[in-house]
Image 1 (cartoon, rainbow, N blue to C red):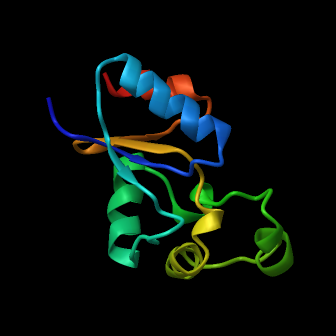
Image 2 (cartoon, rainbow, N blue to C red):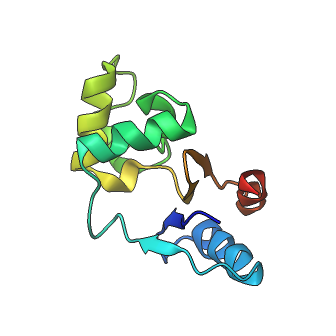
Length: 115
């Protein structure tokens, strides 16, 4: 079985629940604390490819920083990626990666799609 990675934020209940689901399946995923160590632009591009999403769909639109700086802006793909690198709090969570596929685990049960 290929390694599983979770982009995790411990203060997020959905992220904690997704991690619990993985552990209940006997999986000890690699935990990426992306709020402490923001992904690079290259990592985000790879992640977006695995999610099969444009960068703007990875943005948490409920965050204060989104409302203050990005709401109603028409940014390019590269500009959205840069915004996510600079503001990792804007990245949807949790994201679970297995091989060349990934899901935004909202709801947490979406991790099942990887198995």
